[in-house]
Length: 85
Image (cartoon, rainbow, N blue to C red; front, top):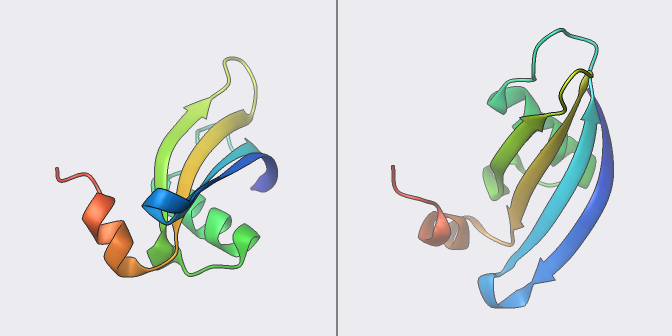
């Protein structure tokens, strides 16, 4: 998966960065959540435990997707803001 960062916003009150990527992929399906999480963590050089993927939206008719992710400063903050499902 080829990732290109398109937007990055610092959210100091929530102790996180909000990052948007454009992903290109060669498979015929949208990448899985686990694959996307690992690719974003590798791209930003952070632990996968600090990354939360909010959205993976495949662009209609193409092999690209828009990915929205939050990168937290520590695991305690991530657990506090992580949605309870």
